[in-house]
Image (cartoon, rainbow, N blue to C red; front, side, top):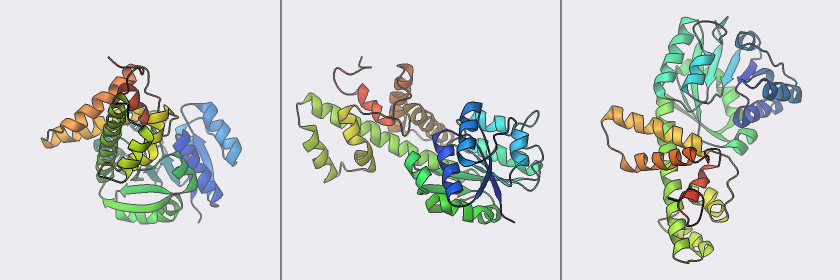
Length: 296
């Protein structure tokens, strides 16, 4: 039997994953979003249904991807009462792709098991173009048998598929990936901001960075954007603040002090307070260049 696939959460990541699987010949039967209009538009585009209830999404599919915003939204779609993906969920597999706390993934797994369903983490370390092209870096956790069941689907979404262990582990790894990425982003913004204040040619400075110990993936993706104030959103400052917060919470639980992670979290939280949270994370440069918005 060919698995029917559904998506809950049709923002830019979820919608592009649905498009990708449709293009690969999978049966994407249903899409749902808190913003009904977004789900309806995507449904028309890919030939799927847009059920008004979560229970109807579960009824329409065998494998359901959730790509929601935060812990509260994740627990909400797996509510233990009222409209929920858990209704009629026996035998279904849920692949949960949001960047949320490990504890929430563990709780969702508990609820799914109680309903006779399976839950798998599918944490993504990539951005919008990779979701559309099927080149996501996917870190998965949960029962190995559940991972193997949906592997053929995941392989069409990913160029690098990694199983990391029991539920909660993928969220831990993803939190650390984003923590380090965010630190690199904030550090690059400070380096370029200071270079600009010193009157250096930032094009030359970026080239020197790229050939020395200052090189990083963030330099490739964000350096020119920081210089040119081009902050079209691929990974928002608000998400950076949330994800750094998850990592800092894990550090507190482990009894570790991570001053760089905390300082980075504070920078992205400042962007949110200033109304800049929907800029790309490269927008943290707005806090470090002279005469840009947000300087104290």
